Amino acid sequence: MMSISKLTATLTLALCTPAALSIAPEPSLFGQVEIPFSWPANFPCATSEDGQVAFRITDASSQNGGMKLHSVDVSTGGTFDLLDSLSIESYETGFGMYIAGDRAYLLPNLTIVDISDPSNLTVIGSFSEPLSSRINTPLSAVQGTTVYTLAYGRNVDIYDCADPSDIQYLGRIQLDGDGSLLSVDTLGDDKLIFGRSFRGVSIHDSSTLGSLPIVGSVNGFSSNSVEVNEDLDVAYAFRRDTSAQILTSIDITDPTNPTVLGSHDLNDLSLFSDSGPIAAIGDTVVAMYVEYGSIEILDVTNPSSMLRMDPISVESENIARVDSDSLLVETRTGLSVYNFTVCEADLNADGSLNFLDISAYLAAYAAMDPLADFTDDGNFNFLDVSAYLAAFSTGCP
Image (tube, rainbow, N blue to C red; front, side):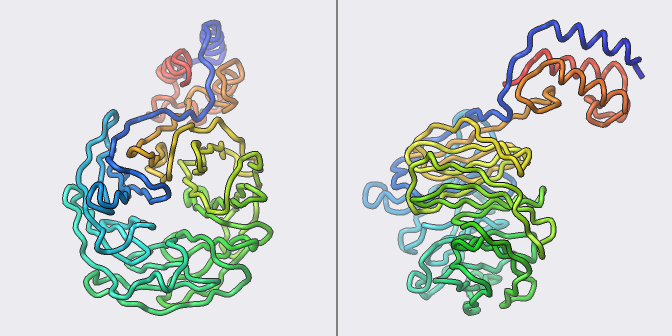
């Protein structure tokens, strides 16, 4: 292993070369596509589970053949390729969309689309009875082939879609606890987390089909939108109304005892009562859709002390997570993807490259911490130092 004295001299010399400042993580435009007649706003967008294909719904009425589901290849940057456009006008659906496996589930009238070949989208099932008379929101969650949709008050409708040609309505469950249901997300394969009006969130066991017993809850805030980052065991809830705009982070490590980690006040935003979606991008960024021209970005590296970053200023309509590095943005003219890059050389994550990062690398190298293994080969030698120097001299976006 390279001696600490030589390492210190080498890195100190590197420090004499100015390095770029960073605001980590920084969003940059990865690619985009134009889709004719992409208005109106608030129609959904989503991505395949592998993040290679994006989907959005448009309603152009007679201008472009009515409501359509579009698939777009977002695997390569630049100008994305539009793969297919499927008419869904006759199904009177399109205000909600959930991707699970090789299916897209559309609401409010439950329609299932086979997306296994994104160049040949095909409707493979729909529910014969309109759901619009049952529900007042298109929010839904899918586990396996079971679909959960939010109904009035504390009610949840459940559908068995194992056979998409014969969808079975399993009935309605009224959840325990206070507060009307406003949002829902999956928590693993056997739990659901529900956002409630002024009653925080409640977590329910969904392992037994047709039953949703409460597991745990936390109160004291409203959850117009809820998003789970299962890798970190953290959920984010966004209260968005005419009196307050607050993002709350919740520790869900123990589902029987969820606890609030922190909150961030966004009261300077002028918003309305509709809920804006949240997208957890990896372990460092949360994005929130905000009407009229911006997407709010927060650094959640420490969920207990979230930091607001510069927003993405774009005439957006909706957002969705692509993968741990990327955000899908639905615009008035089509779709865009933004990448979030993390500066590897910024070891203390303060947004700049300086001697504090050099010091952190020295300490990690001396301790043979994997953080200092920049070649990721299990050894600690000059190759790691050289790789770190290269990253440091390159700077950060």
